[in-house]
Image (cartoon, rainbow, N blue to C red; front, top):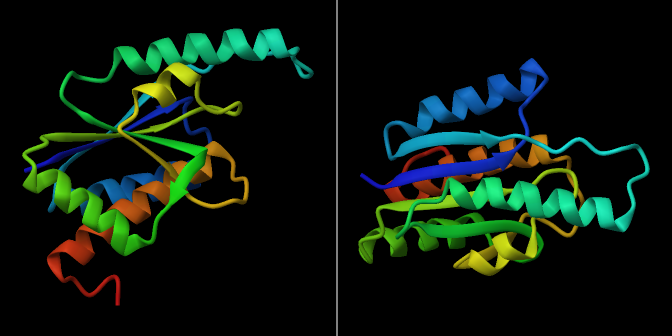
Length: 160
């Protein structure tokens, strides 16, 4: 069974985000070993300088990279990534399984995104949309899309 990990910066504060992620986590157990790992978010002033943002991205990036196991396929969720349909995401996961990849790690940054080091480590860069979403909502959307991808792979009714 493939392992799917969502590695993200920050914690979900509102119960409705937590409840949504918990629901998809429960559904995913049928298809994959699924986990969400959170790393601490750096605190910044209300109007941070470019230098402060850069330092924040570096520190958060180091935390993220320290959680990625060697041999894992890494998918960075970033604005410059490629948009894929649900079917193409399912194809990507199925292809990874066929190639013997045991874990896919989807990485979601904090409010300021991901460091260049994290993006450069990624095997693939994915974007959900050209629109901007809060990173908490992005996590819920990714959980849903992963569940949908496994439903597509298994011929389930959810996607129809």
